[in-house]
Length: 103
Image (cartoon, rainbow, N blue to C red; front, side, top):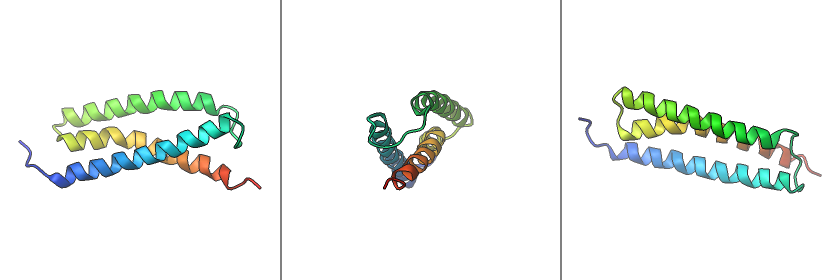
């Protein structure tokens, strides 16, 4: 069995917190765009839905691969969060760029 490593759980918690913060920013920017407060690209609503499905699928596959490879719980969690975190980070960057362009 795997030796207990508390830092592995800690790093997974930090990664989850980062994803949650970026997700809140993305949600706020998209809601502001839907309300007409901020500019929003034409297909942003459709993109939002399709990205969620694709990220969920990739996260599930990554978790299964890590589990089948014998990974520990933190390893499995980190593998599942990687595709979701990649998308939230990219969306936060992309959507927040448009905010600074307002004059």
